Length: 143
Image 1 (cartoon, rainbow, N blue to C red):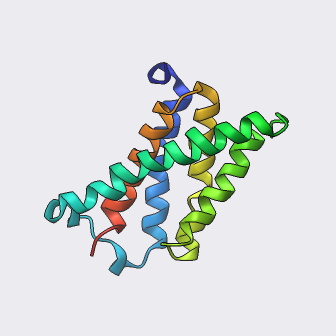
Image 2: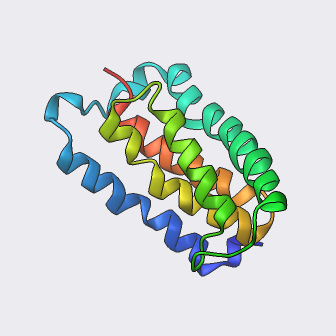
């Protein structure tokens, strides 16, 4: 179970410096940490619903399918299926996000995919994705 996996907890904790870097890079006018308190239902879509749906589609379907059809040749701890899925996942984010912010999802996507490969399930990637999105959208999603 991923709850006993030190790597899972390190990945969860990595969200904190990730958000700190994003805060340092963002213009102050883009930071709206109070907005979810005023619009909690609007916060739930990007913080909870979208990550669950994305993990089902990208890690549960695409990465699973690619893992069955691509050579295993892992790139260190990163599978080829995870790498390709992360490229597609990142590309999909260019639709609704500015290029710089869309590109930033590549590394977290690799982390989510790593835990899909490591655990064989979607629970760990979903928990991580929800946590990462909740922090990001809490800070930058409203306004």
